[in-house]
Length: 64
Image: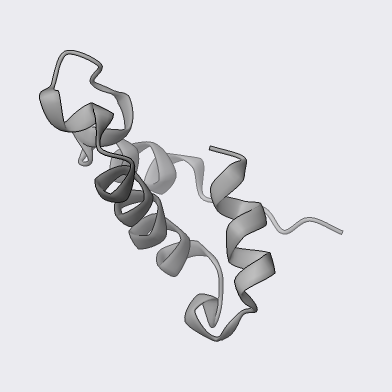
């Protein structure tokens, strides 16, 4: 079963990380910066995210 996500917090966190959504920025093309931004969000929403397997983290990253 999927846990409920605080959508307001998720939207706010994405809005704060323009590297995720602003295609006009040069940094938008930097996959490392984008991944790091998503990792910050995952840390907020997924309990013990850093302790998850690399496969789990990759599966999450590849969705975005």
